[in-house]
Length: 281
Image (cartoon, rainbow, N blue to C red):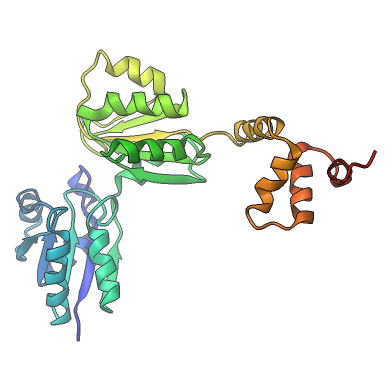
């Protein structure tokens, strides 16, 4: 029988957050695949875990995943851990999970710490609807496209950022989103945990005089539905009824459906749109 892959969440700072189930699993599996074995050895030693480790990271994720798949197909059980938090979240573990599914290997997740969820719950911003962006891409063109998408996002947004890129990213967010509420979370669960609710402009002003330290999670307010509606109304007002109709018909809507949608957008009756299009008084 094939072995299993265990996704084992590890502490993001405070070692007390390590669950008994994860400790026991790490002791029982055949191999632990770790993002950085030099970091993970300290964690394993702390909990008296002596299972063999192998490295699995961004730069060997394809080749090493094939090797790990082979080991599991031969019956070995493997645990995957990252430097901190839950594997496969903004992490090369997603590749290994996909390949396990393709090869019929069972994957199970042992829940635990995740910086994105921890920060969201501390942010004071809406938690009902949210999206996770992780690190913004390094490629400038791709980053512009992502920021353009985020500018219209009405859900609370969660991003990761390193200290040496923090001010630049805050300025890019301000340029794309305007001045929104934001909560900056650093050193989560650690001794010097800091939760800073402010605005994007306030954060920029603060960190232009204070040096950023530690890894950051940025929780950003989404665009309000009222603001989105106002923008949509403004865009319709600048559009002819013919172009407005074409907008919906080009999406596959039939003529009657498009008239109904246009009337709703413009706050008028469907009969008014019909009369306009057919030249009736």
